[in-house]
Each structure stands twice: as C-alpha cells, then as structure tokens.
Length: 535
Image (cartoon, rainbow, N blue to C red; front, side, top):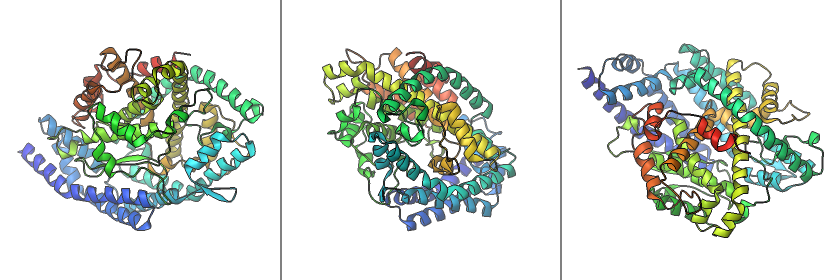
C-alpha cells in the first residue's frame, strides 16, 4: 500500500511541478538574456508559487514516513530526494518570499551593472581585456576598482539575504544555511572540510612555486618590484584564473575560429550532438544581458539552453565546451528515467563533466584534432600548454579555498568584519597583498556569494572528478592520437559518458555513481597526480 501511495504522490508532484518549473526556468533565461525588469518580476512570481508548493507540510510529513517504508529502491531514492527538497522549504512563507525578492533584486543589479572606467562603461569582457593588456598600474587599478563597485551597491542586501537564509536554516534545526546546504545536497560538512584541508596541503607547495613565477612575470610587465604587486596586477578580477605568463598565446590560435562551429563539430564527433541545443541558446553580447555564462534545463526533457558572451579566444572556447558539457549531461538522460530523477547525480558531477570538456580548449592535441593547429604547432607548444594548465588548476584550487572558507565563515557570523575576513583568506590562500583601502565590499562583488550560495566548493570537487574521468579514459584507452591524447573524434568517449554518467541521472547517490562509472570512489589522488606533483 505504501508503494502505491508513494507512486501516486510522485505522479501528482510531477503534474503540479512540471509546467511551473518550465515557466520559471524560461522566465529566468529571458531575464538573463534581456535584463528586462518584467522577466525578473515574472520569474520572482513563479519562484514564489513554486516555493509555496514545496512548503506543503502534509507532503513533507508523508515523505518522511514513506522514504523509510518502501523496499523499492527507485521509489526510495525519489522519496529521499523529494524529502530534502521539501525540508528546505518548511519555513514561513513570508520569510521565503523575502529571500526570493532579495535574490531577484540582486541578480538584476549584477545583470545591468557596468564598470565605469575613464568615463566609459565597460562590460566584464572589456574590463578583463584591459586588465590583461595594460602595462600601466594606475589604469589596472582604476579598472579593477571600478569592477568592484557593484559590491558596494549590493552589500547591504547581501548581508540581509545571508541573515534571512540563516533564519530559515535555524527554523529547520541547522546551525546555519551553509551547513544546511551541504547536508540537503547529500554532502557531509565534515567530509568536505577534511577534503579541503587535504587539498590545501596537496597544492600549497606547487602553488607557491607557480605564484613566484607569476609574480616575477607581472613585476617585469609593470616595471615594479614584486613587493609592489597588488590584486589589480593579476589580470583576473579575483585571481581565480591564471595570468598569461608563457610565450604561448593560445588566444591567437582562436582569434579567427568559429567557436560555435567548433563546439558543434566536437560534440557531434563524439556522438553527443548539440546542434538542437545551440539553436535554442543565446551566445553573444548585448546591452543589459547577463555577462556571465550558464546552462539551464527548462523542462527536464531536453529543452536545454546556454547563455554565453562569446569572444574568439581560449577562455570562451573553454566556456563553450564547459557549458555544453552541462548541456549534454542533461540532454542524454535515459528516456524512461522518472521526472524526479532527471537531474545530475549531484551538482558537482555535472561540473566535473563540464570541466572535463572545458579543459580541452588548452590541450594542443585536441586543437590539432580539431584543425586549429597542425602537428608541428602542437608539438612545439605541448610542453608549455601543460604548464599553463597546471598553473590554471593550482591558481583555481587556491581561489576555491577562499570561496569555500569565506562562505562557511560568512554564514557562521555575518556580523563580523567581512572585508577583513575576505582579505585575510585571500592573503592566506592566494598569496595576494591586500589593497590599502579595504573599506569597499570587495567580497560582495562576487556574484556567486549572493545568487549561488554555498555552491563554489562544488567547482573544485568537479575538478577532482574531471581528473578521475581522464585517468579512467586513459587507463581504458578510450581516446588517443598517435602522439598523445586528443579526446576528439572518438564516439567511445560519448558512449562512456552517456551510459555511465548521463543516463542514470540521479538514480544513484553521487558516491555510488562515481564508483560505478570509474571503478573507485571520489579520490583526490588523480587530481594531485595530474597537477600537483609535477613541476
């Protein structure tokens, strides 16, 4: 009887949620593409309606009982996932609606913000181009500081939002929102803390050597001493991406390439065609448009869209491969997979797939296979491009440490001096000297703190799993060029991901999915062997 009632509940859930979810996701995409207030308002209304549905107390009580009283593994898995979703919404409606309102308001502010430099409003792409190309410290500082002004615009709202999220978590019996977010996404805070401590130890020495090379290069570029380097000298606004310090200019090889065609050709060649997804996406800059990049699954049944702001360079090639990595994950769920399970095994497993593909943009053998380089060019730059990838990974791993530990401390005590906290962590993990003026809310200029809370650690977990995927494919020789791995033109690559990773969706807990796909649990050794132990 329990199984029959549970199946009926799941069927009813789909009938109530499917259309609402579809409309909400479409409104969010339209808002991000246009920046128009009416779409943000529509999204907010639909999000409130969705939240009200999930806050139903009787449904939550039923799921609490049903998940423990069924022997059907598929039903049990769905009931467990739904229980976590409903639990997160068992807070007063007015509190949830205030949270949604603030999230929507802040997202809109980020979307329309443009940094003003020298009397001209610049996009994020233009700010980063300026930071990368200038050799004038004053110009770099002006651009960097201008890009951070959005933090001051949203600071008070973000603080208020953090406290509201904490209120919601505390009403559900959690210490704070950060703890709740991990637990309800099937992660152990203790395990994640231990893993980040382990990764800190694994990457500290390698990063130190990389950072010394970066510092000397940038000091020479700006004709200053290493001790005079400040955050605006590092080309990226957050030093989350590595500065260009080698003689290899990968951007030059992409300058005349059609990134959309390369994306279509690559995924098509590995039996993961994306032409239909490209047709639904929005890939180039326009006024008012969200300046970042994301993938969104509108309906769980194949209406997958990507937002990008493409420029013909290596960064955006990486981003296109990354976002369409997300997209193919969600396109290729098994056709008969139940609605509730039509999601990735975990958010970091879809990040892992995206990162697996995104890394290819810096792989000369992939570039050779795609006709971007000839063999002679690929042979010449291969050693240096590996050094670029190692530098990028180590730089990113230290940045992820900052984000994870900042958010953990932010939700533990949002009334502390957050500017001081931010720069203490940046100095410790990234080795940057803080600016003299630390009164501006630099921390709040990172959009993820407001709109993707307690998420960032999943990027680094994704990098770990991406390396584990590489190790598995290398071991089983599923992709090879005569002179090195290209991961191109090999349908077996696509079949591996379709069968082992995509098709099951959320049928298995993420630990089980990884074990089934790669033969072992998530293990940082693969990442360390690929990036941390070599010099």
